[in-house]
Length: 75
Image (tube, rainbow, N blue to C red; front, side, top):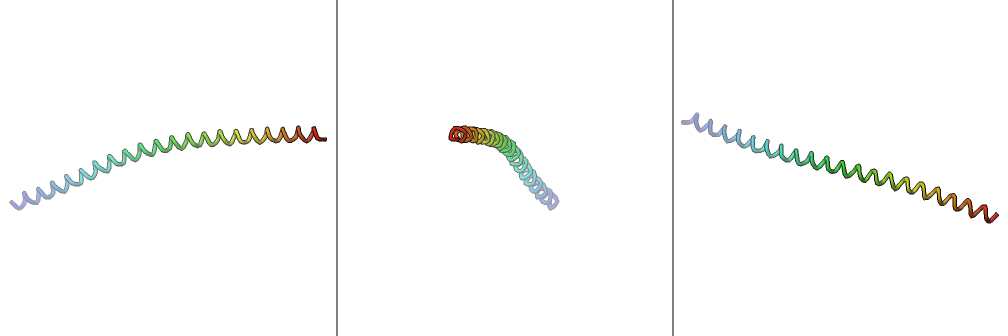
C-alpha cells in the first residue's frame, strides 16, 4: 500500500512538472512570436528613419542651392 502511495506521489509530481513544462513551452512560443513581430516593426521604423534622413539631406541640399542663388543675385 505504501508503495502505491509513493507511486501516486511520484505520478503527481511528474504530472505537475509536465504541466509546468507545457505552460512554459507555450509561453516561450508566445514570446518568440512577439519577438518576431517586434523585429519586423523595428525594421519598418528603421526604414522610415532612413527615408526621413535621406529626405532631410535632400532638403538641406535644396536650401544650399537657394542660398547660393540668392547670394549670386545679390552680388
